[in-house]
Amino acid sequence: MHLAVGITGASGYCLGHEITQALASRGHDVTLIVSDAAPQIALLEGCDVAATRALATTALGEHDLATAVSSSTAAPDAMIIAPCSLKTLSSIAHGYGDNLITRTAETCLRMRRPLVLMPRETPLSLMAVENMRTLILAGAVMLPPVMAYYTHPRTIGDVTAFFVGKALDALGIAHDLPSWRGV
Ligand SMILES: Cc1cc2nc3c(=O)[nH]c(=O)nc-3n(C[C@H](O)[C@H](O)[C@H](O)COP(=O)(O)O)c2cc1C
Image 1: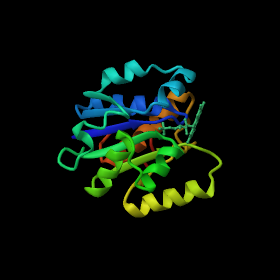
Image 2: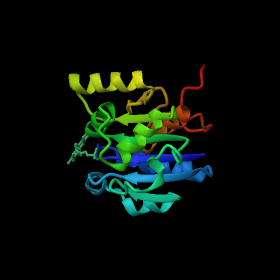
Image 3: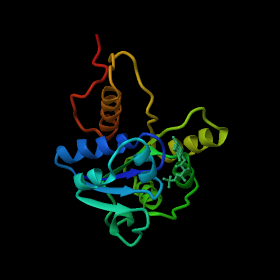
Image 4: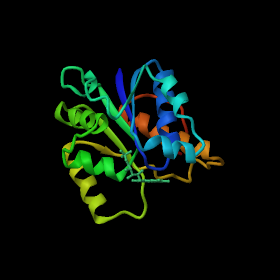
């Protein structure tokens, strides 16, 4: 599949990195789009944006608006934005496609391609909840990185792997990452 991964300036840069890694390692064609705000968070969280870019088939920035990925003729099969800032969430909910991440997300909704959003903020404002509601009604999958205890995570890596598994579940991609497999 051709998958777009957007990484924005919410906490949890490693989510975007690990999802890119998981998709690329399974042979998917990944178009990575990193927002202007994301590298600052990556730096604060000890992550390396260059390493993420190296995993992708194509690595773009939010200003690369002339690239084909956001057009209806070359839209990705699905898009995931992880982490998704509330600003980007709001832009998509209101059709404010001023950068390549928000335009590609809107194109996925227009073309009925899966759009998976991993918003990270707590507590939530009414505006954030209303924007999430709007996006769910528009067809997006709202997948906030909310951890579970039943996998007995011991490290941040364990918690992140659980979230990556959830993201792959939403895209219909099989995996053996930590998840609830029944009793
Ligand atoms: C250290 C730091 C942590 C942040 N964490 C979050 C967060 O968890 N969630 C969020 O919605 N915004 C967070 N922000 C704010 C976003 O970075 C800001 O709204 C930015 O404009 C988002 O732009 P983007 O969506 O284009 O990447 C954080 C900002 C900083 C400096």
